[in-house]
Structure formats: C-alpha cells, structure tokens
Length: 346
Image (cartoon, rainbow, N blue to C red; front, side, top):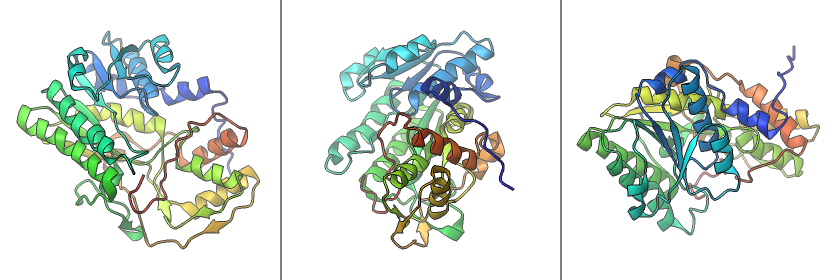
C-alpha cells in the first residue's frame, strides 16, 4: 500500500516557517542558558531559519533572552527577514581579527561559520575559515557554552554493512576540507580543556530542505536527463528543520570534555533507490552511471535519536516534497552538496 505524503510547503514563506518551527524541548534548553544567544555565521544555508527557530522557541517559553545573528550578510534580504522575525542582527566579518571587539556578549554561542565549496584551489582560505577563525572565536567566548557545527566528513568512508561511523570511532578526514573541519573541532576542544568552555560538537550530514540537499541534487540530475552517478552508493539525509532543532537542544549537552553527536536521519539511503523513487514522482526515466562502491560516507546517529527522537519529516515524505518543489520550478540556492565526491575535493 502506498500512503500519500502530507502536503509540503508551497511558498518560500511557508518553507521558512516550517524550517524554523521549534520542536518540544528547544525553548527550555535555550532558556536554561540564562541570557542572550549569539549565532555566528548566521547568514548561510542553515543559520537564518535556525536563528528564527531559536527566537520562536524562547518566545514560546516566555524568555526575554535575545537571539543575535552575526554574519557579513552578503545575500540580499537575509538580514531584513531575520529582523522582521524578531532576531537581532550584527554585521561582523569574522575573517578580520580586529573585528572581534564588535561581537556581542552571550550566554550561549552557536558556531555555524564554515567554508566548503571552492576549497580546491583556495585551500589557504579554507584553512583560515575552518581553523583560524574558530581559534579566534574560541578565544573571544572563553567559558561560554558553545555548539559547534561540524560535519560527518571528518570520518573516513565506511563499509555499508558497518552501519555508519559512531561518535567514538576514529576520525579519518579525506581531503583538505575535511581535515580543516577536524582542525575546527580541535580548536574548540583546546578552549574546552584550557579555558573551561563547555562545548558540543555537532557532526551533521546531510541536511536537506527543498532548495538544496542530496535529494534536490538527484532531482535536478533526473530533470536534466543526465545519468545519476551511483559510485557513491548511499548517503544519510535529514530534514533541516529537525537537524536545527537537535542542534539547538544539543547545547544542553555541552561539556569541558566536549560532547560529540552525530546528526542525520536513521536510514542509510540508497542513491539508486532514492533516484528511482524521485524519477517516479517526477514522471521521468532514470539512468545510472558508475559502479556502486562497497563503502560510503555514513554516520550512525542513534545516540542523538535516543535523546531527542526520530525526524519529524520522514525521508519518503521529504522525497515527495522535493519532487513537487523542484518539479514545479521552486527557487533553488544553487549550492550542490557534491555528496558524490569520494576524494574529498570540493
């Protein structure tokens, strides 16, 4: 029996509202910090709706704490939309060491700044963004509970039968992007152990909404009539609204022996199967290229699911929403995940 997916967002306003909708427990976790929250690198793919979710969650529990979103705000309209939703903003270029005196005080810090795309050929910028800036931030916010966004790319590829890397598995980053992300983790670990800064390291892969993500990449490949590369045979995906809610709650786990949590959906999603289903939903024939490898970049998020529950948007529902949005020409962020890369070159 095929059960129809619930209706998905129809407009960008609807999409952003759903992506920023708090789940139970978020407001209580944030209010417990006892003061204003600073989101660094809040102008990217995840930051705007995550900051908005934090503001909504605090309002729901009656907290007067502010949410302050810090970014360079290069994309038109992002700052204005944040401010209209009750989020305070500050324009600061974190790449400039002299700018750190302009950063606001905080009771909790959410660190989202990073560089991934364009790494190849600009490795020096990648290392400055992903290793040097974290050191500057960690020094500025000594002793302040910090949630650090990281990535499952710090793990090596694992055999499909392994079920995905667990938090206590050895790291093995492939390529300079992944290596620099591990450096970011090490900077905040230094701060935790040296300055007593409680930290949670949030290893995410791959967040997906309707304007970008693994499933969006597959849908565009299918609509373009191009073959789907299945050399990377599987991936993890999770609705971005769920990963944002988990990240906000996870600051309550922060410790001076940093807590590491993997964050993704419970399924190992076959690329072939996902493409086949998306092709059915889009009414397009799907062709494939490449030979499926026996390993992939996969994470086991069972620890996080035990603490905070499974995603509210199942992967099949997400596929249906993506197919409807992409198939109807919904706006895209034009930021491919490049999840197919096996050499770590982005």
